[in-house]
Length: 469
Image (cartoon, rainbow, N blue to C red; front, side):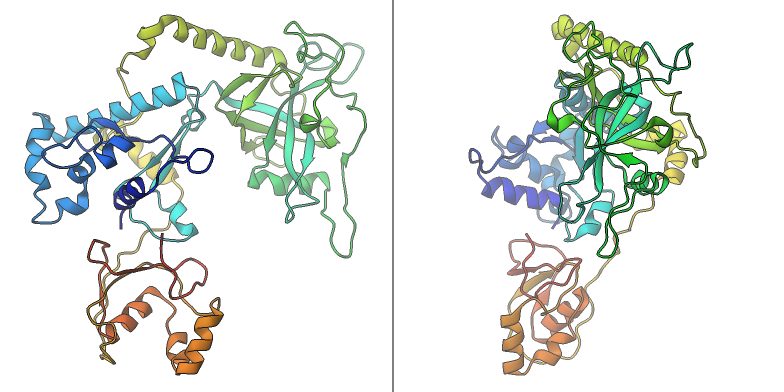
């Protein structure tokens, strides 16, 4: 069952319920280059097209069915455009959605899903390249990109599994008056900019370089170069824009949730490069603004390939300049009114041909992380027939692991009826299919109205009778 089939079922079955069931806004970029709200697309609320709902006309599954007749309207739907022109229309439609959601509405970004993608259970489905997150900083067009900041504090984890570990850090910039110290030899001062969750590749390095060790059953916690303090340390600047946009020198007074629980001196810490979607005004931040959705993209400590000193990072004045430019640009967009809502003339989303002609296809292929390929699968040949107990039933068996370990009732029944040994030999998708065939059942790859049972295994062991969603 592909994603389009699943979505069609869900939109017909699931009804929004206040404070209980919320259906996120979705826009469909159609095969003819137009865009449509998901409710209109799957439910045909704006009427049928050529006697079909929009999703039926776009369905690859129906297009492959000889008797469906959906492809005979393709020439009318293309309206004289060739396939490359249709792809350009799809690209521009996606750009329009991006501008509406991200640029105008200020949302974090887009989550793209391929409606022709297969559905299968388990964590590996996340690594197949069928879902894509698109954010401004991901394509280096965000206003808050490549910012070098220093780790100046940390926050304990609330989770049971990670208790006794740091889960987030406080990032700091240099203050406007003491970015590199002063003539009297005083050290540089820092201002708290934004809280940021750990990146996995930084977490281990940070703990190792700073001497932090989590407590074990035999040894107590080792704080290393980290320390707790009732007062904000003196390497934090007294300059603060929390209360007054013009700033004062009364120091930072953060609310409890924003105050670091542990601290680390600048000379004991290290620099990281951060990307974020944008700057945001904040009444709790020492700088008067914070970074929205910050994420660490690079480690720049002493052992890195590109180290940076703790007093050579961004200062408040530099960041404030970018923040002001962002706010001015946003205000201009509001003042322009309808002009800001005109259709985009170019798109950041390239068609396959545009990508090939740009010369970026090879580069993207070489730099892209290797993902697990979906293995092609076919129904194995039926073996010896043992019975006809499943004759007349049609099954669709999804990939995954199958066993009886988590089903005490089924295990007891298997032992009682004498089929426990046979069940123990069934562990994979092919095993289940062969078992069904040996007892007269029919297995098919696709799920359709004639399917009687949908069986779904997971990456971890599950019961034979577990049904996929």
